[in-house]
Each structure stands twice: as structure tokens, then as C-alpha cells.
Length: 320
Image 1 (tube, rainbow, N blue to C red):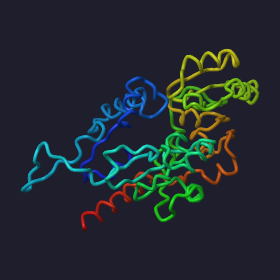
Image 2 (image 1 turned 45 degrees about the vertical axis):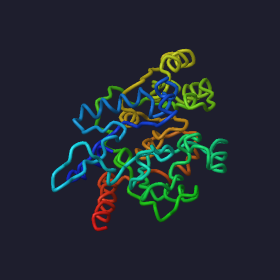
Image 3 (image 1 turned 180 degrees about the vertical axis):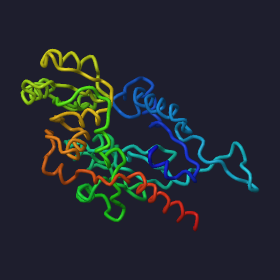
Image 4 (image 1 turned 135 degrees about the vertical axis):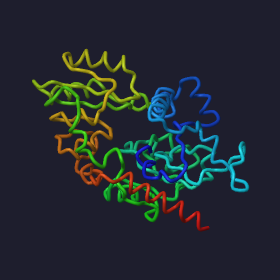
């Protein structure tokens, strides 16, 4: 979102860490949704980033845009934003539903589990029950910016309206070659990026995953990069037990680690897209032939492309 905003500097804008409403906010306060992007751990990390970058923050989008009266701002009176840009539509906050929305693909979507088919059939159930597998199916946005032509076809097959999809590339994955210039000290290792399946109440045989990584690594150094939502102590304890001698990182830039590795091993992680874009030997639970078709376009201009979509919508509104 920050990268996109850099191309829209002539518009007032603000950022908000992901938030929830109603009973879900009660669960957040109890620490019961820490496995989501609305959990305290990830929202605090987002907030720290916004402060460090000196970006304007509008917590929970409460302020909106200031009303103007007689050419001057009238303090205290707000109106809805002219445009909301978000990376998730499986949970839409109450105060953005009436706005124009641009949805930007975040990364890989979750596999189509039992919950996916259940929620897809009974649409009164919240979309987020199926993780992000139902991304794009809210139809609450005006434009959906996706990573590649492969993903365009992928989302259309799921039921997203084709006329709403624009292939722009996505900023975090459109220039993976940039990660090759880094200060991560290790080289020529096997990297295993874990998934937060257990934290999202899905089954995972972590012991089998670790042993698979050990087998692939052989005599090479094995490094594990933990998912940001994982329980670090539990994951580290398991790795130390089944892969003694492996290194474990709970933080750090996963993309830079991938750029330096020889082999990448994942389960259901967007890091597989980086591995494929960089030509790494990549192992994943996804169908790898399909993953190659889905690999994001490497145009290096995704943020500008998405900003151009936003600008067209804003200019169209100004003419109305």
C-alpha cells in the first residue's frame, strides 16, 4: 500500500492497520485472533512501520476526509474517503463498505478446503471462515488488481467477474531480482519457509515437513524461516528436535533469504512465488505446474499500474 501511495502524492491519503468490528473486536482484545492480520502482533508491526516511515495514520478509518465549506476545511465534520485500497475483501469493515474499493491481490490464496466449499455454498457464512481462499468473491470492489494472466484465469474460475479484474502485477512480487542485493550473511543453503496452518486451525504434520526438509538438504546447511503468525517457541522446539543443527529465523526478510538459497521448500506460502520468479529449485504442496503459470509478472511497475487504476477511478468520480 505504501508503494502504491507514492504514485498518488497529489491526493490526501492515510493508512490504517487492519481492523475488525463488533464481536470480532472483542475477540481481538482477548487475543483470540492473533493468527490473523488483525491480531495485535501484526497490527503493531504495521503501526511501527507507519510511524518509522512518517506516514499519516487514521486508526480504523475513523477520521475520513475533512469536509470543505466555503473553500476551507471545517474541522470535526468528516465524509467517506473517495477511495479505499485494501489487500483483503474476505473481511470488509463496516465503515468502508460504502466507499469505492480497489482490491489488490496479496499473494497466494489458501487451498480449497472443506471450509472453502462450505462457505462458497452457504454465502451467509463469513468469507474469512475459509481463510483467504475466497479472495475476490465479495464483489464489493470496483477493480481487482492481480499478479498475472495466470491469476486472472484462476480467479475467474473461482467466480470473480472478469470485467473487474486488471492484471497489474503486485508490488511485493513484481521485481524479485531486487532481493539478490542483500546483506543476509548465508549463501548456498536449503531454505524451508513454514506456514501458519495450525494457527489458522488447519491440520499440519510439522514433523513430516521438517523431515522432508532434512532429506532434501542432505549435507547442506538447512535454514528455517518461520511464518510471522507462528508460535515461535513451539516451532523452534520442533525444529531443534527433528532437524538438529538447522538454523531458525523468526524474523528477517524471507525474500532476501530466498535469493541466497539453492533450494526453497514451502507448504502453502507466497514465498513459493519468489522462488519460482528467481529460478530456484522450489518445492511446495501446491501444484508446481500451475504455480509456474501463476507466477507474478516481473514488470517492476506494479505499484504504478495500481496507482493508475486508482487515479482513473478518482478522476471518473470527480467528473460525476
